[in-house]
Length: 496
Image 1: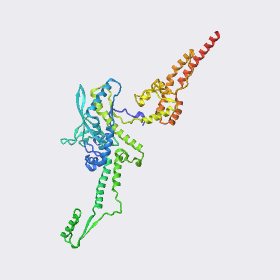
Image 2: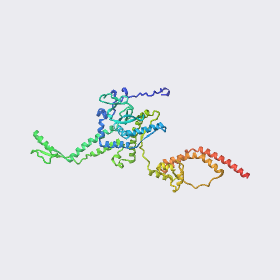
Image 3: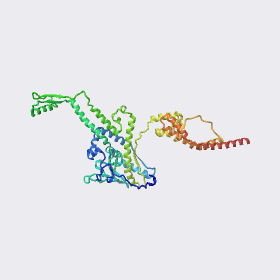
Image 4: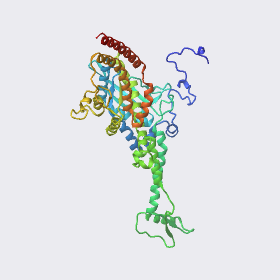
């Protein structure tokens, strides 16, 4: 289709909506949408109660607890949208509100939405110093909520179970995650993939206990004659049951009583099933199993598995913070500071660089003939560092300009005086900004490199791209001035 046949878009228009039975992937059931989770709908009638049992499993509880704790243990920060005064005031107000409501607690409870698929919280407002505040943010039981045909949150109550009460913004905030499209407001939680490993593990343990019982106490087998009366059969059955608790029994003469023991030649490795299901649960929740089994060397690259877990944790933190910034933070800023751009809250999850690795890298760079400036030392290793005056080159480091890389000390040239000195000073003033730009690029390369080979290859790639046109113009001007000055000196010498 050519561009001239494309009509001008209408703001806010949606065509592929889920309302009024327009979603062909789900049956039209009225004003409330049914979750697409086959386990919830097929085994629990749409109730998430079935997943609460999964959460009670020890391995699930431990691994998901690790995942939540890793997020809430990270420090949170509030960042203003800009340096404008109104934006800074909005950020200060948000920071105060997050401290009052206990942002870590709210984050921890909302993270259960990752497990179940969605979570909902109610915002209780207050007022202080003429500004709207948050008196509390209460994360409610997700089972109390359903979603309408337009994806809107509905509160289900005994008085209004269908279609429920409206749960509008800015009083309610909810998240949904795990689904592969935006048409599923219920999301798709980790519990969907943990249900079967949990079920297999529970059943395996049940059979494992039965198997162990057979080894500890064989099953009694009594044989009775074909003509035995029901009374005699009952006596024999009572005798077999008595073996489990009594040290001595009696049976009628002529009856046979033996013990049926489990064969010990075969293997009934229920522990392997148990461990496999535990590893499966860990992989679903944490993306790997090394951090829960304590044997990373046998399970793969330890550093790689740690990176996988870190990526998942960062994704959880970003999910909560992004949704909160687009919802409650935006609402609060809109009511209190209409002229401000909303601030944002985020979790600091980047690990600091290893100081030993940095020092080793700086030592390698110094061997190439470079030395760091004082500002770099303070920014990298802390403000408490200063140049030692009695150390070799200490004065040079202390006097080094900010954010620059100085070359190793060379033999000082003879001082330049007279007209030549003026020409050199003029050339330096015009060329210094150009050379400083080159030095900045080289400095950035050296700082980001992790090996001498990387610095070498980077310099070879960088040198052809350095802008030399302006430097050439400056040199042409300097040479022209020097030529004129030289002719003037020659004329002066001739006149003398």
